Amino acid sequence: MKTTIVALNSKYIHSSLGVWYLKAICGEEQGEISVLEATINEDEDRILASIFNEKADVVAFSCYIWNIGEVLKLSENIKKILPTIVIVLGGPEVSFEVDRFLVDHLFVDFVIMGEGEYTFKKLIYYLKSGNINFENIGGLVYRKGNKVEINDSYEQACDLDYLPSPYSDEMLQSIGNRIVYFEASRGCPFSCSYCLSSTSKGVRFFSMERVKNDLDRLIRTGIRQIKFVDRTFNCNKSRAKEILRYVIESSGAKNNEVTTNFHFEAAADLFDEEMLDILSVAPEGLIQLEIGVQSTNSSTLELVDRKTDLAKVFSNISKLRLKGNINIHLDLIAGLPGESFLSFCNSFNQVYMLNPQQLQLGFLKMLKGSKIRSEAELHEYCYRNYPPYEVLFNKFISYEELLVLKGIEEHVDKYYNSGRFLTSLNNFIRFHFETAFEFYRAFHIFYVKEGLNGRNLSSRELYSAFVKFAHNFDNFEIANELIKLDYLASDNSRNYPEGIINYKEHGFKEKCFEFLKVYSNIDNYLPQYKGVPPKEIYKKVHFEVFKIDVSKVQGKKDFQKRRTVIMFDYSSKNKVSGLFRYWKVEI
Image 1: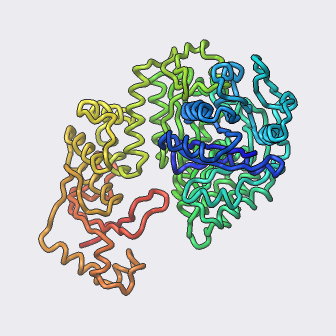
Image 2: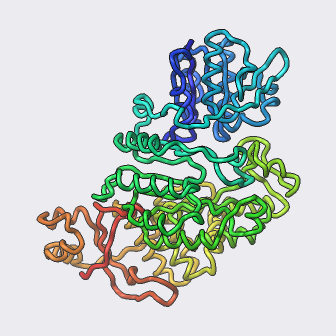
Image 3: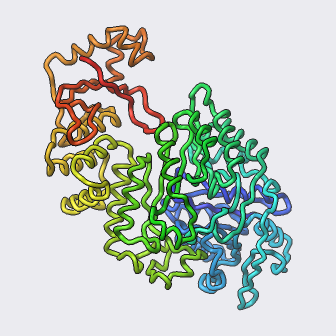
């Protein structure tokens, strides 16, 4: 008997961890097991043909809110093509309301609820051996005649080390340059009502020996990013510190040579001084932290059962940003109970002032099995009744207000999160707006009027749109110079987007060559080019004349209108910001 486990990822850059756990736990007694990974963006007919060509007796799908629609289409069609094939679904999207699910989808034969490894292994063994006593398999949902049978006695691994490592040679060869997901624990100690992690109590940990062995293997493979999926990585402080130390010591930190980036989801209020000290020695680009602030409204946090010390959150994030070596991602959720439009504006402004590298503005999803979904009537929630079950409105915030936040989210993502506009954004907001939220709202209105909203603009068009918007305000010359600075720090084409004004000086190129001929200038700014002829260095750098001192623009009255030359080194990038390094030079 052959079983094919199918993962439909949301993007090519993503990989699946769960399907490889399922394959790893199966032995010879389960027959032949293959894994097929694709994405929801690929042609459906091509994926269907790939599944058909596997010639499997059983096909299993891992189901999430982002892929359930495609999974059901494929499942229904593969059943039409191969009527005798057994279809098994598992994952969070099918682990709740399962009785109704099997009634509505007759082409599905089995559903595995919750943690699936042991249930899957036993089910495949039963199918291979012809055993139909499925009532003995915990966590399984199936039909017995016209009746749906549910065995909700979940089978979880008490000792996670009994689960074989998913990181086989086959898995690592299939990954290529995609993100690899990693778990050092399962479960979450907290009970946030919007999160499915609250449905399982307690936290279980892989042993440190197992964690280090798997990390060693991945690091040696040269994986680009290892993304920990632990819901709260630092809930156990001593374990988190040990893993962080190990990552820093094992990843070329001594030579500041970073090939693998590590992503952790963490609670900022659980950081202590020792953990901050450990993080402070990590080289640029090694570690990024995703921190879910969600809201700064204490009443809202209480309504969703989220225990957070906001003062500590803000203090610790500020300390991390001050060091500058850790990439910080902060999350907000719009649509939470108790959070009005004005309250969310306040949350946005407070978090924005922390200056993270990424600010993720998400919208509440009323997930199956979550407490907040069961309490929907309490807060008069109206939400989409299909995945991803996103909120439309509640008694605190209207659909129209959420639409405005949708527009703002788009501009935060395109401009702020790109990292390409930080100097121009920060100073333009200080020059012309009381708060960051006011700027993004005005920018959204401009986009709508210009017919740009919803369009997939190129990076060059994003700069042109910002320049056009800046024309509506005083001191356009300052905005132009700052936008030009950001453009040159992120793009080495030297081809300016429409609207940006640059200045030519007679004999400037010759002056630049003279600058590059001076040994002390090379020592101070470009030591990697010692002994390289100036003509060759000139191809790797760019000199630009600005009308203001862009290195000192800090506020409305703090700029100096003077000729300033900035040199950009297009061979060197900051590993946290991703921008080319540049300096003010005297030419």
